[in-house]
Image (tube, rainbow, N blue to C red; front, side, top):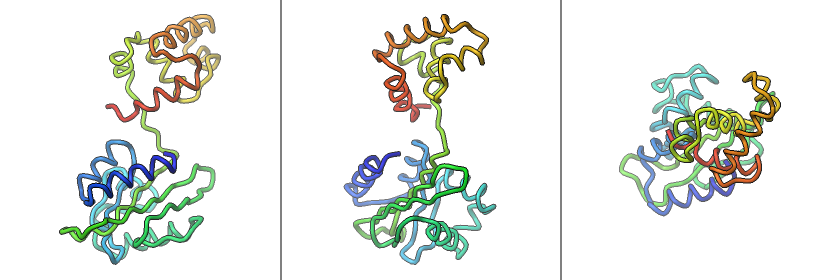
Length: 206
């Protein structure tokens, strides 16, 4: 997720002047972790993706994190690894570098008005190693691709080259190029980079 998208998401949330549990569901749907924080930094609630992240990285279950010192300490540790200052009283963007992995992005959005649930800040977790893939069935419905074309488009969107795909699928490079030409025509794209961008825009679709 780019910084621009993060800021746009914050603007949408702030425009509603309300941060609640429905926001966590929205973040789950688009593939990002979400944590609702009280003014003292305690966790009020987390979504499924954040819960999975903390389970894998910190061996903590949701019940270990909500309304406890444990959740606040984990965030403090992450922030100590980040590249900037952070306070839950301001909108912030912090990049946490990780060895042999892409960074984890922490983005805080402060509620503009009091919340009856005591929610003060929404903390968005963007794990750049997390990949949400579109189903081939969706590509078939949206663009009228065949099963083989949808599978190829998905491979291309994940960064594979035509020659790598041909080897993996035990197909000739000529067959791959023919299928790719058909995909370009049906998706109204002209090059692989454009196709990758288009398919990735659809990763929100289940």
